[in-house]
Length: 497
View 1 (spheres, rainbow, N blue to C red):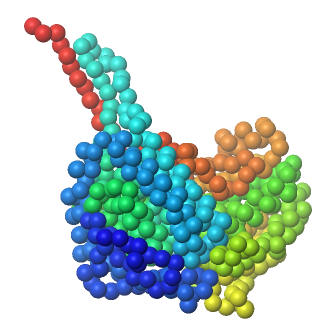
View 2 (view 1 turned 135 degrees about the vertical axis):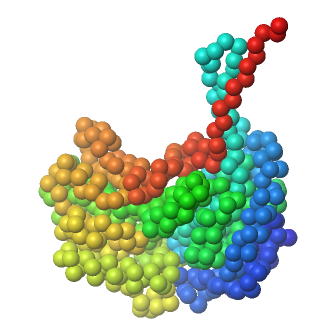
View 3 (view 1 turned 60 degrees about the vertical axis):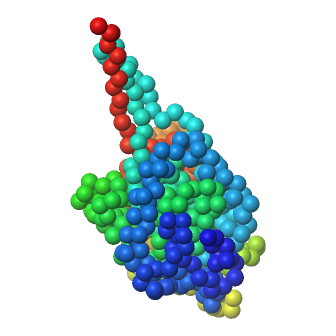
């Protein structure tokens, strides 16, 4: 059964859950809608408001399918992912357009996200023909030792709305390649791309039940998935608060839990930096995807001697941004993901002003004329921010950046490391000695030299330190290992008597 009749770029389509290779309505009979955040009258579709009973159906389907899938040779599993990459390539424009309508970010970014998904599919597919373990010398005679990889079983995946195709792809595909079956719950703001992923994987030859997608509220489905006795692992990308809750639930049963969480990412700008490059990179990192990414630049720690010159450049870059509907090829920044995010971001503008920081640009919703139907907010820059202020410590998740002046390198590193987060940090300097000291000193899973805090590559591991995660890494050669157990095997071959 195809989803093509219900997934398109016209408004108001009906979407169903994907369970055991079939499109099913929820047992509860309720639905919810998502709308285009640039024009809220544009309804993307209605989705199943799934119940715990629907989740049980999905887990049962995964349980029935998993052993057969695990018995499929890994190269053959990889071939399914290669075919998926080809389908992504064929439907690149359709996928990007749907994503822009559903999530709001500009076409250039959604096309980039589809390309990331293509690259991940090809990379993970290739892992099907790579060595899975090691051969290791034994300390005893007539004995052979090796390690092999073993699937976990059923993996529950919970994904966010800001990368509605790429994050489901970079979690689901390595889980599948490792021989697991997956139950996937996408964010309620952006379910359509995950359902499209399920449809394309079915077309690529994935057996029924190996991937199941249920839509609905995280409070009901997320907790039930994380606590289910037949689910062997949870992989979540979301807020640190939700990550702590999921980790507590999983910890009760010693269930494996991989968390990719929030960030308060900093760019350090020293006095010898290329200020034009730094300002352009910060503007892209702070205002790209409307600041709605875990690696977004939200702090700029700048040496006082260049503070004014840098801030002027950054403000000019913000002023030049063309804001509007992401389907317009001239637009450079789209809306926030929903209208509820506008007052949430604006609350931080009010907090910054109350704390005594200097608002130098933005700080207001955009509501006039072409903006009146959407969730638009002006790019916002605060100057003279101190590290103790809430706007320097808390994740805003919007087009919002705080400029923090420091005396020099040592203070800059202390401020950069001075939050609970440790996802992505960048430094701009021409001093090679300080470059290598920064690589050593920065407490973050991602470190950038003379580049912004965004732009990771799929063949390198991705993840954070401290409250930005729990030590797991996604992507790269770690990806499949994340969804596997390691077995040590000992083979004795004593001489025959």
